[in-house]
Image (cartoon, rainbow, N blue to C red; front, side, top):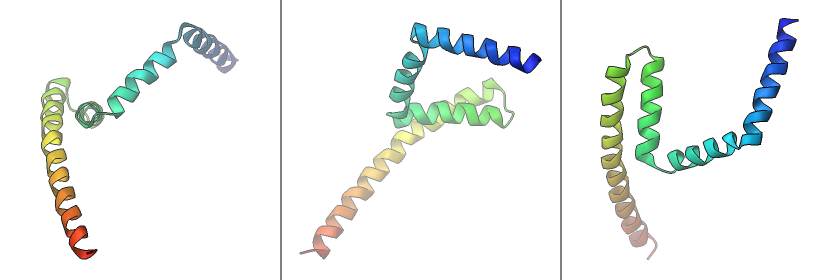
Length: 93
C-alpha cells in the first residue's frame, strides 16, 4: 500500500513541476552544458569523482583542472584535424 502512496505523490510532484515549467528550464541548462566541452568535462568529472567516494574538496580542484586540460586537448584535436585534411588533399590530388 505504501508504494501506491509513493506513486501518487510522485505523480503530483511531476505534474506540478511540469505545470511550473521546471523540466523545460532544466533541459535548457543541460543543453548549454552539453554544448561546451569545458562545462561538460567539469560537471562529469565532479560527479564521477564523487561517485568514487572522494570529497568535494578533492573533486572541485580536480574538475577545474580537467576542464582546463580539456581546452588544450581540443586544441590538439584541431591541429590533428588540420594535418589530416592536408594529408587527405595530397592523397586525393
